[in-house]
Length: 416
Image 1 (cartoon, rainbow, N blue to C red):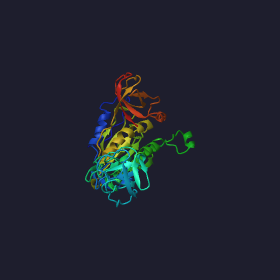
Image 2: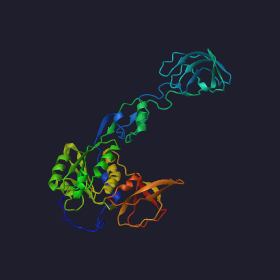
Image 3: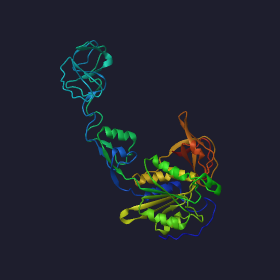
Image 4: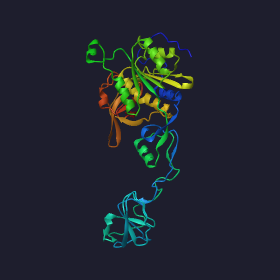
């Protein structure tokens, strides 16, 4: 592949020919990304990970027939009318071995979760029982098999508990734990270096007097990964070709993914793309016909036995970074873990008109249900250098290019 870098050409934003669409960019990420292998993790460390192999139960649940309530285990071969009486011969608490074998017209005091004794035909909850010292009397009629959790009624031995590709949620982990699963094979997380480019980042309030600005990108990205139970290494690099080259050379052999902010456009100090190409990265795409986030760059470098290092370059404006994280980085992260799925867009109804634009826009909006219909309302201050509306936004909404949007029109969105 020819990695020569063309001379800088300044043109109207979004007017260049050949820009790919949002959907094309997402598909190219899926087409050019392979998963990173698998690892065995304790279940306690596997939250949000994707299952690499089907998980089968080695036990049945419940493991034994047990009482569903606090009450009395009873032996009787027919339904029992009110005022039926039974001889009380003992007590069983949860966790105790049931050494009793009931005979007809006998009962045992039992508690929720305790193993029912042999010959139990039903359980009477304590609210319908009168205790008379050595016997009990029913105050209501009772049918057979009442309040008995039967062995294996929830899970049988050999039943599939979690399927390959399933994400381990809090509920999934709880369910697997109840079935005695202690570790699980999952797809490996990528090792990620986040590179914040730019000499304009302020370290102190005093730095603001010299024209610098506070960095929102590093906290934004770090918080995004923390929400996915993933740690990343954050690095800053100066806006010089040599600094970027030295850093990329070092990171390429140590990380599965280099995620950058800034330095991917055509400015005099935008070195991410030219340096990556110089170092042998293969460009997958550069520039997407969207707003914000047009100058996005995706590339990869094969490392023989060490696998592949991927590079995703996001623009520097924090609004564009936020959009890139929610749509493209999320898609890439899942693909690196064996899940080649496009974003799951929802449909909602816009509550106002919007003017057309030459590029597809990804607007921060508020989605809320009104009489069963998901309504979408745009927020002000959508420029890519602004973030304040994220304190209200709960979704990103796709606005097709070259279309005047009318109130009531159905649009696609993504919850954030």
